[in-house]
Length: 350
Image (cartoon, rainbow, N blue to C red; front, side, top):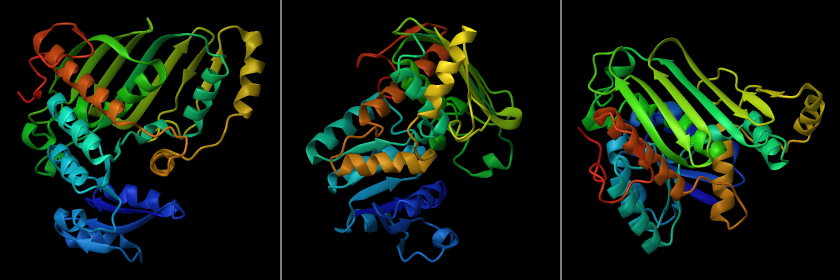
């Protein structure tokens, strides 16, 4: 049984719900929040401890995993503290807010011989399982183009939380806090990014950080990609399209779990559609969202073959955010990966 302490009862509520469903693998020993009332609101009869101080969880010898659901500016610091305490770490996005901090986390993980799992729960769901199955079966052919839309609605109520919309508290805007999951899906499906150009703007809310962006990508495999981001839409909607040599895969509009809704997989040559449809029927089942994410972590910690999100993948996402902000500010096209000599390697804070 893997014993977990959740730090933060905000998004931590979603983590707790998923861990309840995986009670053969996980037991939540503690939830930490400065507001103890928030912990009681999500307890639902569970017998975990309620702490107001993260150190109480870090010092608990029974805890195997620290699950960090805190504001972004605390992620790197608490991850390193948890590793120093001999704990595995699960960390909400972003794992860090500089590539220099990623280096420190990587060193701490090697020293402690513990694992770090950045949170990218969008990867799990029936439709994404279908797409991966079609790719594994060789039915998609090469990817040609990807189009991502992160069109959400965020207004005054959302930004009433004091740290949101600020560089000091949130460390970024829609690029960092909203589209990062879809950008992870881009690299998950299409591979590494070779270069990008980006534009950002603050057009919707009276905040410090960006709430609109457009980005174009060149992938190392030769494919191209686009990302359109706004927090001024009339709805919360995520839409993804991957155009392959042999078929086009198009998501539904589910904002938080794009793999949970049915996708369409349309053959480029009509007489191949039956082959694709037959393969879809044989797709292995998997859990959706956080439940699928945590299930893979349980396998990783217990030494089983797994597809858990790796520290290296989390590091790549931070490199991508760094490159986007650099391009948006300078107008330059940026080549990845970034070297330690890059001017934003120590952080993208303006």
